Amino acid sequence: MPVSWTLLIVLALAVAGYLATRSRAIALASGDIRRLHSRPSYYGWNAALLTALPALFLIALWRFFQPGADTLLVSAAALVLAAAGLGFALSRTAPGFRARNAVESMVKGLLILCSSIAILTTAGIVLSMLFETGHFFRQYPWQEYFFGTTWSPRFGGGSQLGILPLVWGTLYISVIALAVSVPIGLFAAIYMSEYASPRLRGIAKPAIEVLAGIPTIVYGLFALITVGPLLRDWFAQPLGLGSSGSSVMTAGLVMGIMLIPFVSSLSDDIINAVPQSLRDGALGLGSTHSETIRNVVLPAALPGIVGAVLLAASRAIGETMIVVMGAGAAAQMGLNPFEAMTTITVKIVSQLTGDTDFAAPETLVAFALGLTLFVVTLGLNIIALYVVRKYREQYE
Image 1 (cartoon, one colour):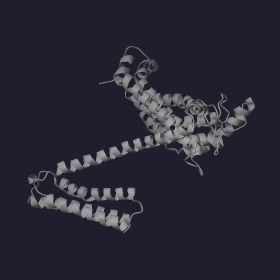
Image 2 (cartoon, one colour):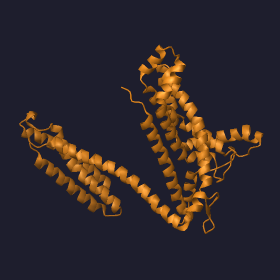
Image 3 (cartoon, rainbow, N blue to C red):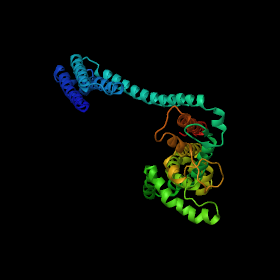
């Protein structure tokens, strides 16, 4: 029997259990629901949860640990467990049964399980990177990895896996992206929260947030087809700075456009959280509208704005597709923004693409790069949370 059929049967049994147990509870109370400890729906949910949850949990565990196991055996065990749960729920149904307590306990356990899965998944990701990074450093010196200035992986030996060119490219592109997104996003947030009418704000804010829903591959195509050639023809070639459409500037500009809604939306929410009484007080003392924004609103919202900028920086550091299609793949260090460079995320993809030997340092270095990127972004997030919590203003 296919597992999908088993799932449908289990869900059908749960629905039947809900209806049957609810009706049984009302019947045992002689139609007077005031005699029941809990509302009739709780008796039904108790049966539905006891019927569905154990069976679904069994199927999930079996499919995870034994994906090739006999589906007939799995289906039979799940249906037996569902029937047993339904029978147990029916047998416990009585006017004095604390159905609400039982349902809330099961829901609480389900929520704890979901939270644990999220935490364990994060721990698994970190531990897998740690273990593989340990294997990498047993084969390649950590001094050359952290302080090497040449990135030249060669399967078969003779690789130079210095991370500094990748770190430089990552930071260079991220700085350009933030230089584009922070002023535009912040000014847009100030305008929408302080100057725009409600009607205009209702149009402008969703229009800006549309940028956040565009897939990054579309931004990459935009960088490759439009922005790159434009920068090459209008700036790089006339100034003698390069002849390639793939450059740090191309990726930085397009990534900055992508980050505008992150900065704008978060800053707008933070500015709107500043109490109106502060604005009224400043205006009452003779300040102009612009002086009120500059001297009262922005200082009050500054910790949250700094947090928004740091979160945008974390997003920029972890971007891949825009860099692949806009900045190229040259691992080099330089100051010319119209030269091709690359980032850590791009090299993680390239080292794990194709037929690779997962025991070779040239492949294991991808896990070291991933762990490095994880530590950097985690540090930025921690700094953002620290700034927001330490300097935020509490208003009544």
